[in-house]
Each structure stands twice: as structure tokens, then as C-alpha cells.
Length: 276
Image (cartoon, rainbow, N blue to C red; front, side, top):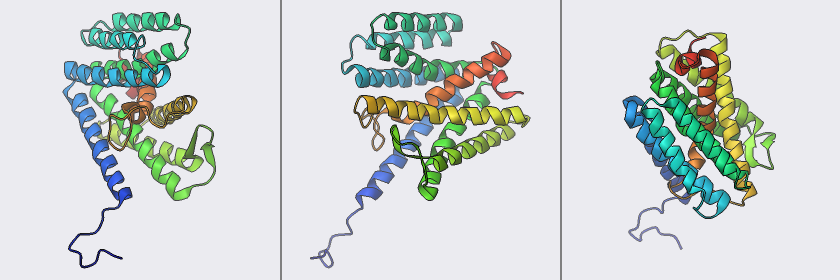
């Protein structure tokens, strides 16, 4: 028996509803990230402190099953971000190093790994934003990560083929990884061109490195979830699961970007990332 003539409209597709929820959630996250990046200063620090705290608490929940004592190190991360926003970058990094050291004494490798993982997200992006050329540097990283994720999804679906890491993430393919890499590099170069930066071969390599780092972060989190038998890191984002499920790649890419910039130009981290 069909619903024709009953006066009721067509039943919405569950798949269509799920995709709509995912799109709305992704747009909302992107708006928050962009507003935080554009405002700079304490606004960026506050956004990153909240995101980093949720990210680390999800890690603690996933790997420990209980909030204490892992949540103590969440507080350390927030304090480190606050110190960095006040210009005490070295102090913030020392606090993170102390948190890593003390968490390592608890005889669980997951605790120091979680502190490092979350610090790469919060401190990596904040240090980039607070240095000269900070805004284009952060937009450069965001564009690469977001486009890598989107291009990998569509290239993987369209082309299929050999699996990238079937034991870690069964849905990911080599075609998707390559498509994501190409898309990420193109997005990064577009941002650089709009910002008036020279498009050198080394900048192309940096964009490729950040795209690969983003995919590596995604695979790392997938592996951790598989180790602990979890489908998602949490339930905070409708259609996406946990916050960590959405920013796992950004965490690694942001940390790598800050490290590359520092190795190239010292304290002028964003300049070191973008100018080659």
C-alpha cells in the first residue's frame, strides 16, 4: 500500500537527512573556525581553548573510559593556550612539556600521546595566528585540510580502487588519498596567490606535506578508535560524532605547520611557513 492520496507528503530519505545534517554541522564548524581566525588575539585563543579542551576530553574518554585523572591535563592545555595568548609562548610550551612528562609517569602511553595531539591543534594554530602573516598562514592550513578531506571523499567514491589502509580505515582508498593531496595543494596555492605570496616549488612541497599530515592525522585517529572499539570519538556534533572526528587531521597539520615555520624562520613562524 502506497501513500498516494493519503494527504501526506513524500517520506524524507534517511540518507538525505543524514547528509543534510552533516552539511549543516560542517558549515557551522567552518564558520566558527573562520571567525576565530579572522578576529585574532584573544578571540582566536578562546576558540582554540574550547576546541582543544573538548578534543582532549574526548581523547581521555576514548582511551581511559573515565574523565579523571586525564582531565587534569586538559586544564594544563587550556592554561598553556592562555599563556601563549599573553605572549608567554615559551612558558606555554614548557607547561605542555611538563604535562607530557607527568602524564607519561602514569604508565599509559595514551595519556602523553593525547596531550601532544591536542597541543598540536591548540598551540600550533595559535602560534601561527599570533605571529606576523598569521591570518594568511592559518587560512592556508585550513584550506589545505578542508579541501584534502573533501577531495579525498569524492575521489575515493568516484574512482574506488585499492584500499589505503584497510585494517585501520576500510573506506579509504589510494585514489582518495591522491585526490585529497592534489586538491589540498591546489587549495593552498589559491590561498597563497590571493594573499600575494610567491608560488615557489618549496611552497608547493609544504602544501603537499600539510595535506599528507592531515590525512595522517585522520588515519591515526581511526587507528586509535579501532584499538578501543569505538565508532566515533563522541556525540557532540550531529551527523559527525565527536569533535575529534572532525579536526583530527587539522591537529596534525596545524602542529606540523608550526614546526616547519619555526625550523625555517624561528619566532616568525607564519613567515617561515609561507615565504620560501
